[in-house]
Image 1 (cartoon, helix red, strand yellow):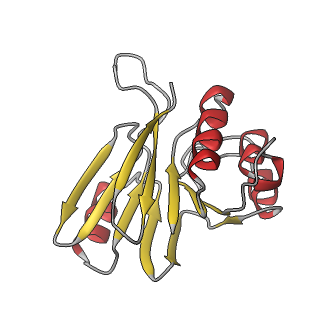
Image 2 (cartoon, one colour):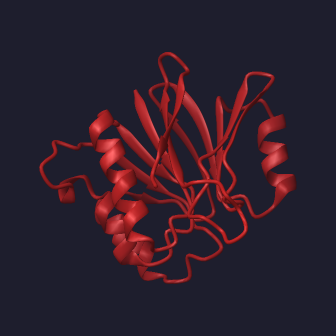
Length: 171
């Protein structure tokens, strides 16, 4: 199974569309947004039925970020996916994922240290992370650029069969 991972898109249509295109081109089976979508209009492009000229057909999951203040966001995502609140524990193709926006470092650290998950996905920091700790892979795809940081926005693709993680530039 191919899982697309994105975070902290903050209503930036350019990066949302680039992520959707990257996931559609790759043939993603599921897409996980690690929070800070911000407004409902920024969620709707992830609806596989809304992807123009594509046969996109993915499950969509999102967790609430600290900037996701519009309660209508849950309704928008619920129209085509699952909005899990602040945390999600997902099993996709027999692979265990913890998804948390990441505003509390101790929680992120505890999820990684628990060794209960194959992948711990998080956002919030806008800094790309790909590291492994005792068999648990910790991923943060980054986010829209923050002034003073040079890191380009990216998304990630996780192949649950091989364990390969690839980074897609969204800039």
